[in-house]
Image 1 (cartoon, rainbow over the protein chains, first blue to last red):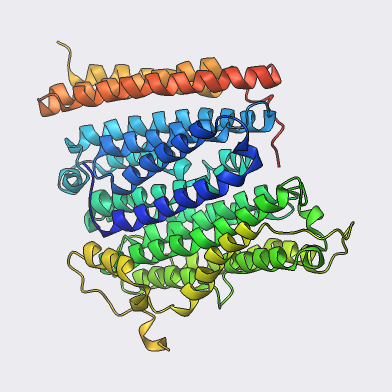
Image 2 (cartoon, rainbow over the protein chains, first blue to last red):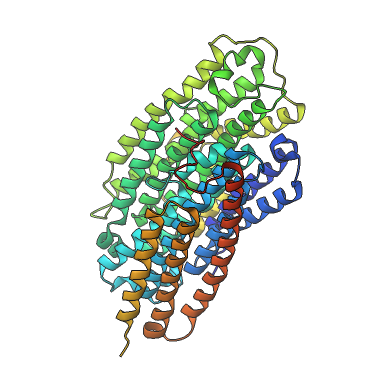
Length: 448
Length: 101
């Protein structure tokens, strides 16, 4: 029912780390401070439980139950600010989209159960081998509706900006990292175990389908982020775009020779993403507190560099990392991911989805687009003149939290050789490699 | 003689009706009813496949889990709909447009 391998453990650590940080910042968040404090933490823990189970789900029923456990808690968390119409609307849209998507996905799972005759992901490839590809594709499309909703990928991404904007900030940060991590672990395992077989990949062409979804997700996410005035909304679209890049890692699974590498690349991306994205959200949250800027609007960040050098520099670093500028973790995360994808294509001989190298070009172009809106925020903070000159002071405890997030954003970049990343990534590779010898990584030729 | 095909035809119809309700109704409660139809279509599939293809009670067990989950989901969704009705006095998703862009 629940797998206990490197992939699961790695993503569990990411999810639990995010939950821990969420609880820490929520203690001081005025948004969740007043009433119902106990319920908030219980809901965070239950949502984390659902996401942890998602990371390990190796059975169609478990996959559905884990997704629902995570979703039901998240719906309530998004609407946690009682008496605020913004928050109520966020959870309203979340629950309507979520209920429909998970229902459609369950229908797909029931078809998959009928075609394959088993609920076990590991037994599905053998069962699907003799089935009609059309039926499998149909079932897969239904399942993708649910997965796509959880991954916030186009065309099921519509809920995400509204929910991210309306939900309390600690919840937004939590959903953007932990929920996505659980969903990606689940997607990786689903396609690896049930559809990793070469014959099935050729017959159903799922890598091509996912490559198209990836392209649309990153492009629409990045284009929509341009022109956003609200920082939370901008980060929501940026999060959609990052989901698009990450889907490339799932497409790379189509080539069995690099599947271990692809999984490790997605895993590392999430570690980097945890630090840089949570960091960006927490700076926004800190600035939105009444005694500081009391605003989430980018325009109000004008002149922040003079009013609070620490917060401005911290936010800039997180944004640079999100772009993928070299010294920071985000760059290496992207490099590993693109490398795994390119290798999947170069080493593929006739494997479906192996030759989608155009997707890498599209991802690089998208990175260039994303430069614009991230740097716009940095430019507003550093060069625009402030409306008022009152200094903005960061709380000492918050400075400590920022250091906890800033240091890995640097250090992960310095420890960029994958062998130096320590146990978890090695575990992913070791457990995920069934047959292929773990290929030498890109890190090796460029070692310090 | 009722065969698997009959069950699948009914479940597909249920799914289509559910999807139709979700896409056309502009009332959140009616949309939730559509979701219930979709879930029950899936349940019917699980049970029918289990009876005609596999034997055993695996599909029936899945059905039980889904029924419980559907109840939990309905409870939470209704609470949230009540909340939005108190805030905005509407439960039409098209009219809740404070978050946009």
